[in-house]
Image 1: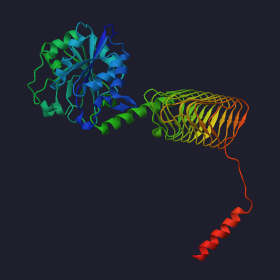
Image 2 (image 1 turned 90 degrees about the vertical axis):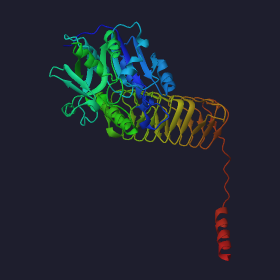
Image 3 (image 1 turned 60 degrees about the vertical axis):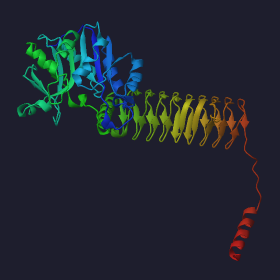
Image 4 (image 1 turned 180 degrees about the horizontal axis):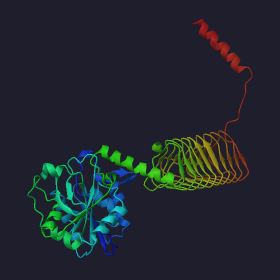
Length: 454
């Protein structure tokens, strides 16, 4: 019964709920999964269908949602009173004025439904039996209080019923309504206009459009998907469960694409982490947004990486922190307890231990000794440190920006460098060492005598 879909597509995403169980000042649909607000995950999946319009139905906390979706080309419609899902969808009618095509109805707190599943819904809508509405169903381990879908073996819906209004036989059905639907715009709002609120909750149920169409002699259809794909978020616990589902799938995809994860369950990806082949990631590594990793890279244990670009053959960590703007060029190395922020480590350069590189450019083959810091902030402004190719920075050095270290220069250990150093020069800024023969022995004898006299 599948068909090729050529009709224009629009999406209505319901996001008006208060989300009181989250106990948060942040709107429920803006809580992140893999570093990205859950609503934006859904908008991305919709965008892959190239929709003509996307309308977000907002309510409490609308300002937060409107600000989040504005850069993504979505419109918003306001549901001032929470009168049920049918009423919520009806608020999008003005936003879809003049639109003729297929409409997907989605939920901002059900963020992981895939583009492929949305496409299946639309294809079913254009099946040979021409259903009025397509409902996305699922079979949870515990059907609980979900609305039930009563359907025949072909997927033709006999009846839709909310749990509150279902009888014992209907409650025994395991096929549940996810709430996601597809319908033609010409049908959707005409059916919604006929929905009443004579039910146990006194609300306007979206599912009633299926029953109204059936009464007109127009059947609807259900297709099924896995329960995890339509999992919703109403609490912090459910948010954590969805994060776990997302991460599990992402780890599996990484390994299938040629990444070695030593302990997969301990690696946490962001929504946009890009990884090449033959990359090894050791345990307890966390990726924030904006990370690009080329081939043949090793990320050692307990590293945190965000907003960084890592070239081929680089080694990172253990216990490294790469912050936004960090760029590691081919064959470079960042070792244990090294932090980089808005800094470039040139080809083959090394910062192996206990170092901070902020607002810095390090040339190819340079060596940054243990305990080196670029002093990039004076309390008011940030300034840049430039270290030339092949330079050697001795341990425990402080480079006070703005400062330039020339190619091949050597900075003696323990130096505080405040002026530029020319290429191939040796710079020493520590105090001259002085030794006093026998002083330590005399000091000990004097102290021991004083202690014995007490």
